[in-house]
Image (cartoon, one colour):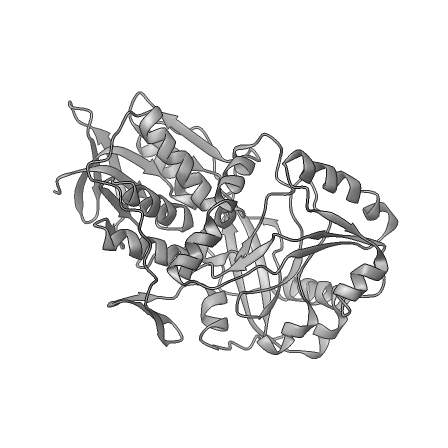
Length: 414
């Protein structure tokens, strides 16, 4: 049994890694517990790597507030750490007159969120910017601040930096029970022993409702949503100059054609309700055909290039659209649930919100002095599934990283 931590964080995906990064820098003594053998192994290992601006997020939502807070700092943080990013921008394409009629609504929604740089393009302007997009568009929007980052290396670097400041990060550590003692200290029991903390943050993603239930505070239910992707080789990088977005619906941003930070063109994600909370091993023939067809009708030149990889990601959706950021002030338990496909785009904003809750709701002051210095990381990839940050090795769990950075090709059986 360890001494008492200020904060115990359950879950080592992008949200958990962002919490330990931000709170440790502020001086909190943090412990992060991840049940899998490696960080970023569940929902976060199957995201797109796209850094959204929130131009189409619900107005007044926690999601939008967190995305906007993240936007203010994430690229400077990434640049300071020496991580890759590309301010690629995004082009939203209307493929018929009915879709074109929705473009002014998207612009107005962006303006209501204080984003005045979303612009309407004429069809001729669209094809000047994106000559390889199918020549049947009726209109388009330009969203300049959309970007792409490495969706694995970013949270891994956050956790690594926190460890350098004294945070403890344990993997292969399954939380089995949570209870408070007579002094109000949480006792978190795991397969690797008992840990104690003044505050517990539940950022368990796909198992967030299960972890909340351990503490007797369950307020939501995870309703897993599967998204699947095709990955092309980096020789396709000249086929698009920005992320090609469809007109969003009430339920989804839709299937996107975009470039990773390593110039692999990617098509996805799909959206399918599922019972399972783990990523499937491969894509079904039906999904493969659907994504190939989307690529063919959106960027026809993709048809002459082979798919080099596929991957899937299960998102921790819930019965509501917004994030669940719920401080249980009577017991110093904080729930971070339902943080779905925009978790990467909002991660540092969520962490900022959590830091406010620590002081304003839980009245918890840091045990240590703040240390906001961000040194550039020494990063190298030793093989297609291993990266070294300083003297520590980490297993690469995201296909965008090991396909793009390490040139690992997994040829799909089409």
